[in-house]
Length: 398
Image (cartoon, rainbow, N blue to C red; front, side, top):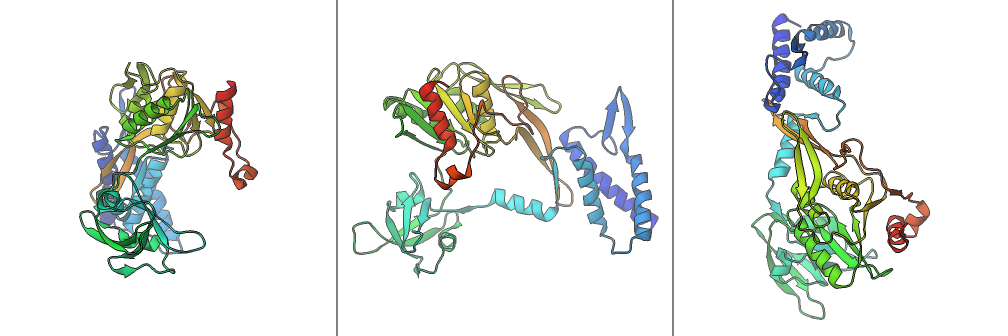
């Protein structure tokens, strides 16, 4: 490799690495500078060793050598890998472009579930309340006969039909449906839009109608209002004990988690956030609590992550709830995404979350107060062992 090519490649590696550090707020010179007792150590010189090793490889390796950009990307990945943080990552240009497209996408839907019996038969529609399908006149039990004049046939999969219904936000699709109890089909035009899917479902348990069950699947901008409505209705129906199911809740909006916690907690800390280069921030609940005293159990498992771990940790540390289930995922950090000059990017962990008792969530998760082992026999027979253990706890106090 010529000295000129080597110099250009070295500069490219340093520029890519340095640009990510610069925007994160800790780049101060040609490369990442390591500070110890006020002494600055320039890591750039360490690349002499890299080139010493690479010369030996390219002079002796029997196979084809990778392109210069592949070497650059590998060097970046190696440096980032030394941080031992699974969420600080390097993303190549093609993948980063796909990420941006997904985040900026304008595709929408009609807001309805499509289902077909396992033994075949017609495709049924169930509109999601407050979404375009319901507003246009689709009702529960409608049979879908055609999409934009294309007949629904027995050999079409539900997934293929969904693709026919989806489209760009703001455009329309014509559904030919047969309403329940009617003999003549009708055409209903539905304008596609962003779909609002409720994050909360709730009910009184049939096993014990004094126990209100709430399942929160994610933290959206509407979650706090949905939880408030669920709690109010359950209490009016006579619930005097509560189960909050956070299993497989992968998180969502941080502020939503804090607001939901506020319905259960008196004034005090919900979480602490430690951020690179900033003072620690405390998120607190207010003194306007909806259900401060009702016995509460929170269900958790390995799919309980991020914002749901914040809520579970706050409720447990503040002695407001008992956690029942399995260890949570351990995703308690914030990543900043920085785009680099060639279209690639680095995702950098810049903040971590801690519970009110200062338990680190990131890469540790939460151990339940009462662990439940799931058996294959229970799975095969449709028994929810974690929910059953929660009911037992609320009924017996242990």
